[in-house]
Length: 262
Ligand SMILES: [Zn+2]
Ligand SMILES: [Zn+2]
Ligand SMILES: [Zn+2]
Image 1 (tube, rainbow, N blue to C red):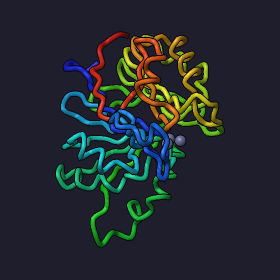
Image 2: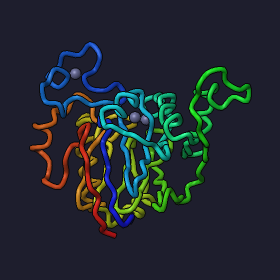
Image 3: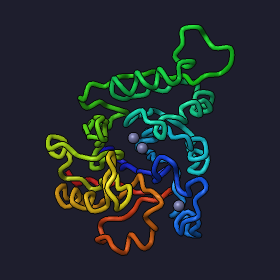
């Protein structure tokens, strides 16, 4: 663990369409509780003056302004679905401010998909106007070091796809999964903070339900768990009342100090 601790900021806690959802008038989409407003899912991991971003959502520009992010040292991708990558172009102001290239990490498939979607960024042609300056690293499943903190990829099943969650220190961020393979569960012991996908109560082919996420909490026994990638089926306050004290719904803007537990 970094000597001066580790802070997680929830930049977005919502599912792929966000909450409120376009055109919807349900109780959650029209709620006055700010915790029922959920941008697309992402967190910022801060330690030793460094900021590591997990996923660049379509809301990234607004998330960065809202959380007053002033530097960005690395990007780590979980997978290449649109709700996790489409804000990548908005990292340009960090390139300008820092005058540096930003390293980005993801599985081989994810990096290939990001290169395809953002062809102009990685094109050999040379750009006429500003483009993000990024240094892609395909990771092979082995832990990698970012500024003195080890990030361990945690393979997860997201429907038919295999994607990565990440463990770093005594925290882990597991978004977008329908199953946690046994071998991955073994890498999730002794956690202080565990983020888990909990889309809604009704089953979904590529995401976890609240009930299933609670089973994961029981099995993995973190000190605290936070559910994320939440859709408009789950009103914040009412849902939290039904959860054990050490399990909370994440909400946009939530900041968590991670203690050591390993
Ligand atoms: Zn997603
Ligand atoms: Zn709604
Ligand atoms: Zn996804």
